[in-house]
Length: 471
Image 1 (tube, rainbow, N blue to C red):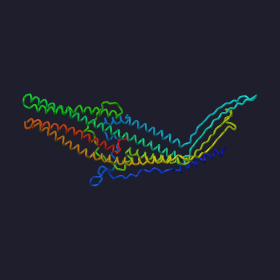
Image 2 (cartoon, helix red, strand yellow; image 1 turned 90 degrees about the horizontal axis):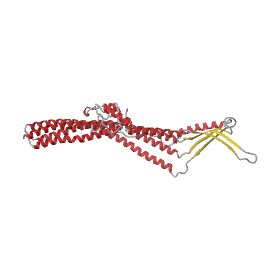
Image 3 (cartoon, rainbow, N blue to C red; image 1 turned 60 degrees about the horizontal axis):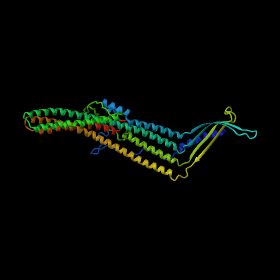
């Protein structure tokens, strides 16, 4: 009996050695992607200055250093804590962690314990009756030797799914930070337009009152009154629409932060929102490690590779070991004494013989999914480079656009001043004033939108470079 108990560990040790040696399928290798030296060369073929600076990338910075408005920071923190997308992504991570535990358990032996007790009495035959009592305790270990790494590959696939879930959460956080900052800047731009409209209405109402007074005294025509009214109504008509957009934007921010629609506190004016002095893009190769969506796509590739190897291993023989050891006695008092001990040990080998190509079809299915995942990975890399290139272009051009808008607004204001002087001097009619004042209103609103575009370009560049998920 002792030799049998010594034989089992020998078999287990031998099985462990074979398990380490017998791997089915290729090991995972990181996809080889040919990357350009820069995000976008200029017309001369040289790298753009933003694409090859030394040091860390703008995307490596924490969001609290990029967005310095305290009210905006409070909104982002509330969103990271309460947003449903972030909370659901965290729940998916817990699910993936549990799945790893479930899958990994298949690599280890299972042990079942049992207790049996019975008491039987037979009917009397003439003068004889029989009574049989039995009490037993046993442990039954079972183990399937993972020679071909069927279970190890399944565990590797589960771990890859866990990492993919973690990167997916980072991608959700990155997008959420960008969405909150974008919505907040859009709200502050609407505040600016509303302030411009109200200021314009007040100024034009004063001019309208003066022109009406002049018309009552016969010093100007009714046409001038009507033209002055158009200026007032154009500015006042924009106010309700701007207020509608503002309240809807507040609702959007409220939902992003995990609350119900409510008013949103304001911080700095749009024009006072700090902009980074430099936005280094960093090395293009580092983008693959910084963007969580790309890393998630790579983990899906690793998962499929492990699943393919696990399915392939099912075509090989399955070797399982089982045994039972314990005690059995007709009396509880003698259960652990005398010849009450018992044991049983057995091994089995099973080999799939006919499954009508089910295993091969399963492998082909996973290989096709792996090919799709590889193409998706390459597409994600390509799309990431486009997003960075677009954001770098937008960052440069929105600054140039804002400067031109400033010049336009200044010129429109001066033209309106000169038109009013000419009208008051009787040199021109009020139509010139109408045109000039309309141009000022449009130019000032356009300048506010230019300030918004400049800040949104920073947000998009930060997101494109993989920033936002760092705490």
